[in-house]
Image (cartoon, rainbow, N blue to C red; front, side, top):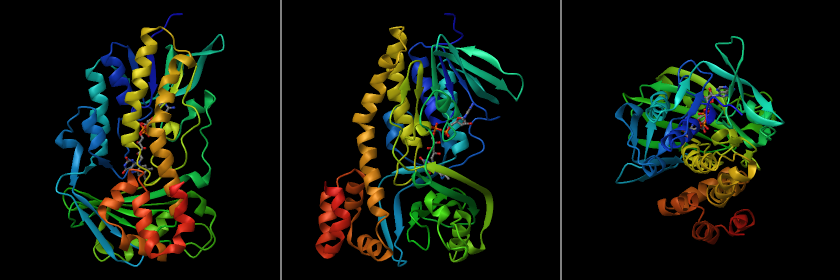
Length: 405
Ligand SMILES: Cc1cc2nc3c(=O)[nH]c(=O)nc-3n(C[C@H](O)[C@H](O)[C@H](O)COP(=O)(O)OP(=O)(O)OC[C@H]3O[C@@H](n4cnc5c(N)ncnc54)[C@H](O)[C@@H]3O)c2cc1C
């Protein structure tokens, strides 16, 4: 068969650009296509990212990608009590995501990847029953065929080509958070990530304030998608609208109530289990397209980058062996499930436990745990924090006990 490229990557977000960068560095001819006119724009993200995954890939973030450095967190319990955890070092960044995505994509170009923007994948090309490329449309014009032995869906939440390839990409409302966010100014902050919890504030979710440069902040909310069908939300009408909840929060916030909104957007993010499978013959799915998103906070940039590196190492092996069959691509899926998948399963369990807690329980927990307990919990080490909470409130064992199984 005659091919135009070794791999076609659909989507130039963090997963697609990272995957392409690794593959091109190993000598593969890779094409990234993205339907957006400009990589990284529009931004639909809180822009928070921990330092770990970026450093793990030997990358140094250029200043233009960083809006603010994060040195800790402020968690506000439903009672309004604030708990502040400060670190001595930078633990993460609030990005300028449009610069970040473009930078990641440029790194791929530097390794030899070809990128086409304003180009949408509309259909899979099949030959003898096997995927052999994609049909692309530039700027809505007549589709044309581009061929490769490997097609990679890094399409994010839309994942239409992954669906066309036979993957179960549809989400239930229970397994998504519906979100709304404003970029606001002025907001005087202390470089802390601020998280506000409570069923009246954000049912099965939270409000975030992520600090940005120049007295700005991303002020956003994510609430359980299943609350869309809830009776009498904060709006006083049936169905919970994240924008209504967010505006109620802002109106009651001493600083934000008088601030301006500079950017305004809504979005949906996966917070359920990942897809059951990530590979088929000649096809891989990576990042948010594969529902590889943290179920606790809906963060997907770090997982997308880590996953892309893993998937690329399998793709490079497949390219060397000239075999892109499902079994040749399977090591990515198997290794993901044994590593990142295990962590994600624990976080999903934590999410499901947390959503059973009422505001009184949350108040008690936030008053009881320390920063170390929080870090342990986020790392999936539940035993000590659960023991501490249950010692003071034994009735919580019924709910929290699930974390010890
Ligand atoms: C409101 C909100 C807040 C968030 N906040 C955070 C946060 O603070 N931190 C964090 O880590 N994560 C956050 N996330 C999640 C994060 O944005 C995603 O998990 C992350 O972008 C996933 O990267 P990706 O490369 O897999 O997909 P994406 O970044 O979504 O990239 C997919 C790309 O594919 C392109 N594409 C899709 N279909 C086609 C097609 N058919 N043809 C061509 N191109 C196509 C799209 O244009 C897009 O550029 C948030 C999400 C939402 C909705």
